[in-house]
Image 1 (cartoon, rainbow, N blue to C red):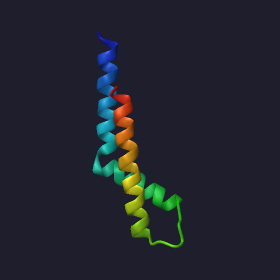
Image 2 (cartoon, one colour):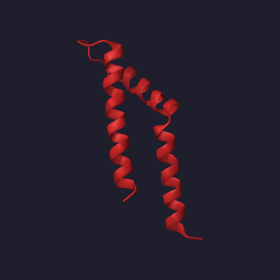
Image 3 (cartoon, rainbow, N blue to C red):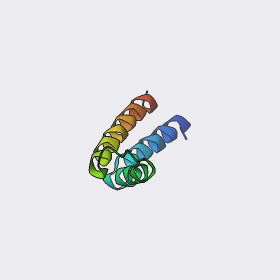
Amino acid sequence: MDLKKVAEDWVGAKLEELKSEEVKQEIVDKWNKDVNIPIIGEKTEEKILSALLDSVLAIAEKVLKK
């Protein structure tokens, strides 16, 4: 059994799970609930948080797949 391959497969599967629309929405909803920026609306907050999550996931994928 090649442990490196097993670890790579697991990391890949978890990244894909995090990038699923369902999980991304769950994360954004939680962040949106926890973060309140009074000068912007909830929909704008959601868009900003979603974009931040996309960036974080892209960076995590780049780092973990090295």
